[in-house]
Amino acid sequence: MGVLDKKTDIGKFRECNEDAVALLCHPKNKNIILLAVADGMGGKAFGDIASNYTIDRISKWFLNKDVKTLNDNNKVISLVERLIKNINTSLINKYGSDIMGTTLSLAIVNKNNTIIFNIGDSRCYAYINKRLIQLTEDDSDVWLYHKLFKVRKDYLRYIASSNVINACIGISHDLCKVSVSVISNNYDGLLLFSDGVTDLLTDRKILNIIKKNKEEDILDKIIDNAVNIDQKLSIPLMLKLRVKEKLVVPVVGRDNASGVIYMK
Picture 1 (cartoon, helix red, strand yellow):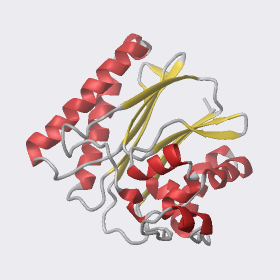
Picture 2 (tube, helix red, strand yellow):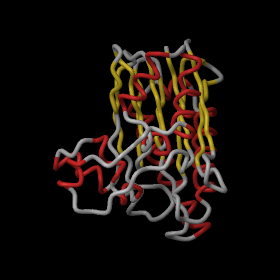
Picture 3 (cartoon, helix red, strand yellow):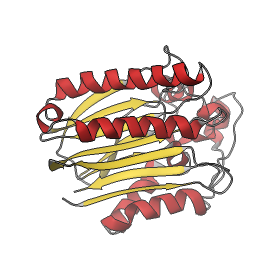
Picture 4 (tube, helix red, strand yellow):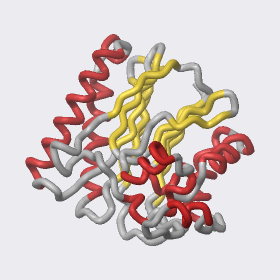
C-alpha cells in the first residue's frame, strides 16, 4: 500500500493546537482511504472544538459507509457536501454564528479516483512524476493576487492579511462554500497540509524534502522544517513594489503545523 502518515504539532507559540487530522483505511477495504486536515480558525474562540468536531463527524461517516457507495463518485460528492452543511449547521446551532470556525481539506481515495473537498486555505497536493502539484485553491483574499494579478504564490505568505479566509465551516451559512474536484489515482503521492506548513515552506522546499528522504520520513521532515528550522525568509523587493498592503515575515513555528500523506 505504501506509506500512510499523519502528524500535527502545536508549534512554538500557541497555547492550544487548533488543528485536527484524520487518516483512515476503510474496515471493509483497506484501499479505500480518507485523509483530512482541519485548521481551527486562529483569533476565534474554540477553533479546536470546530476542527475536532468536523474531523470526528467525517471519520464516523466514512467508517460506517458501505464500499459500494464510496466507489460511486457522484454519491460521495452529494453525501459529503450534505454532511459538511450539516456539520456547519450543528456548530452554529450549538455555539452561535461567528463564534468558531475551521478549514477543511479532505480527500477520499476509492477504487478509481480521488475526490477532493476543500473549504478555506488548507491545501491538498499531488506528487506526480517528481513534481508537486497543488490541487486546491486557497479561499482567501490574497489568493486573488496570485490568480488575478499574477503575484507569485510564494509571495502570498508575506501579505499580513493572508490569514483572512473567505470560506470555512462553523461561522455562518454563507461562508460554508465547498470546492470539489475529482482526479484519477495515477499519482505517486497525496499530501494535505494546514497553513502552518505552507506559510513557512514553499512548494519547492516541500518537493525537495520529498525527493531527498525515505517515504516514511517525509512528513516528519516537513513538519520539523515548518516548526523548527529558520528558512531565512525576507520580503521580496518585487512584492514591496507591487503590493501596497502591510507586509510581514512569517515566524518559524508561529502556528500549529499539520499534515497527512499517502505515498504509494
